[in-house]
Length: 506
Ligand code: MSP
Image (cartoon, rainbow, N blue to C red; front, side, top):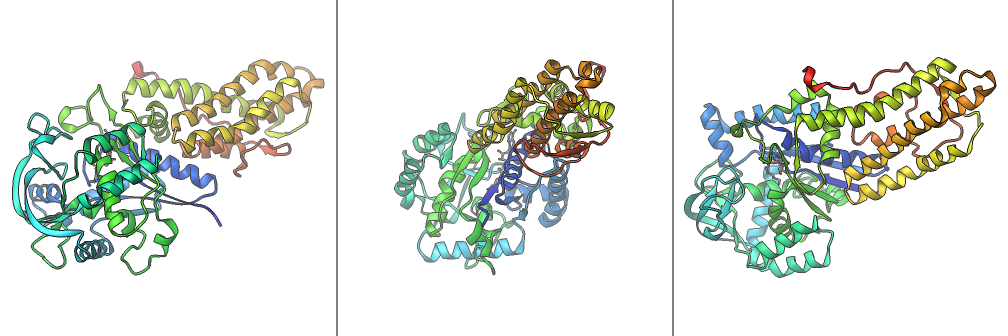
């Protein structure tokens, strides 16, 4: 049986203004999901939209439509963007899906009946854009520590989740499972800044607005949006639904990928909910850094916003995917700029990858009408390339297992570079001048094609449509990740995969 891999992104607040930063989590998750599929895993890759809460209710009011009409409009925007980015999700959950709403009500009732949720009174400070409660001491300059916006005081009858009951168990779990919170720095932050100072019980219902899932036994309350949203990771698999076969198969999640600002919810509230529900905890929560522009978060109000689809139109989807995956050391913040993007396109994609493919396919067509086999007229220098091809799969796998995506890509580009060097060293154009060296020439091209083929397979998770274009030109579609002695190539026409871009000419 295939090993399973369940990977999730956060579910997004539906928005008409997704920016390139929003694409970051999803592109990374997509490349990991694709990679695991390539390695033979049974992958479930889930994303979706987080559609309840005051923020959405306010936006709908501004637009003069009902919240449901509003979310229906903007959810299409998310799906359209993921399509443009070639995101290969298996499941897309909307928190307004009926089965999800029903399951959340059952979760809430179960937690209430077993005493993990109780009724009390809430007095505190609330940040509506982040849907987060804060204590006075957590504020930064009197404002929300996450987004810097104004918080307002709320006082209402509310239900609470007893986080405090589980604090010790949570610390034990985190400490005995070093891989649970990654990167390491976030783990220390969670333990030292949030858990050790003492967990306050979390307010998990609201009465000041109505756009949410009603508490089933007290309908003037709606379920707090984070409790609703976090549940998505299990309701989508059928938890508290009619059929929980997928839950049995895929849970616990192998990886929740989240931005650093929501790591807290995923490593404190979510595990405690799961402990209370008597379900195993996810194997890993990875809190990644942000993509910033000139050191600032990306937003319309800062004037650095552009629709990601404009970049895709201008540079191609794989260039955007490649940039995000290669440029940002995973876990840290990274900077997005068009100059850096263009330099990646020119330096890596056009000069190294595009050039190698084009040169090799052109020579194969020119010297052998595209038909190439292994004539086995080998020389010593070939072995270096063959060994490198054979080791690539393992090298990439070592990096991917640690979520070092940028380094995994570097491994592939190292082979591509060496293949270009192999052309320069074997000088096929000189071999072509001598009829007696024809078999040697064909062997050289064969080795190059094998190198390109294996690289194209391993590049699929990162730049899927370019990988497919290369496979089409090679006319080879299997996923054998080792050097083969006996392929037979009938090449297609050379077609540029990436063009160099002159930013000044734009
Ligand atoms: N709805 C919540 C998540 C609930 S999960 C149970 C949410 N949504 S969000 O739309 O605000 O963010 C979705 C993801 O986009 C988060 O992982 C967030 O960190 C990420 N990003 C938003 N802006 C970003 C950057 N500028 N850079 C990188 N990622 C960023 O939070």
